[in-house]
Image (cartoon, rainbow, N blue to C red):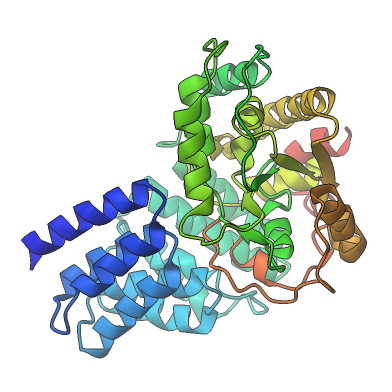
Length: 435
């Protein structure tokens, strides 16, 4: 079936490029017969996962596994999908099965993923032995070695063992820094372009409003997006790459006399996707959209921005203790780079308020977790939406960000002031705590 499937995937890719996500996934689901091979099921499920239709991808995997196609890759993909949907016990079953089936850790980091399926209460949990034995293996890539260290750091942090946690986090950064270099010059160029102001011919009104939730990672963007998406009028599309893509194509050019219609159509199509009719608001929570606000407002005047920020010391610790896959977040390996990015983001936030005072609001992480209902009412008022009753206690959508575990827990304030608890083991935090 491979040649037929190749053609189906090519057609599905065309549909997805136009924003027809459901149609693309349904085409491939229909192409799989009852006797589809494990390899074909894996390819289809992976495509559907990348199209952000995790529940359909999970069904494809589960059906293949039920037929006996229990390959390590299918098991690993099933575990990843179950984890993103918040089915943590099921995720653990699949991830451990993939490990015992011989999955290559450099291909699928199934053991580090285990650490994000629960909050540890016992530092002798069986996961520790698995992670430590894997870390002793010689044939690991630096990325995988770093992920194992981050996982062990989380385990010890959960159990109130800061010295052990810091030892593993430092090991993680030592391993990752060998291959993950942060491009500071590119960052500075993007910051300069983000403050570029040029008279632009604005696009026509849009039928729905993008809601950008921006700010540094680990500042509450995922938690806020999930809370806002409880109502019927707001849809959370997760971390979309399209606005930044359009911005990178257009930033620095003179748009005078020319509407950037092609870029606008691309961005809005991927926000709306297959919705008929469209919802009134769509959340795009890519934190780094803060670099593209000039483009966002030019493409769609209805855009509204919620800028999340957090105590700098707590944010620095949270960034440094978290594993990020994206190269744009490699600044998290060094505290001096974290401080530089924090300072730049503060300048960009001030610029945004001066430039669009009625379209940009701040959201303090401490305020969100201490008084969630009152804070959310203010945000809904900014968006012109009647708030749903109460604060969500569960999350139904799939989450692909580094906060996939934390965002599914009841809103809590345990992380406030956490940097003070680590000051004795991480002296680099002093510069943030003294700010």
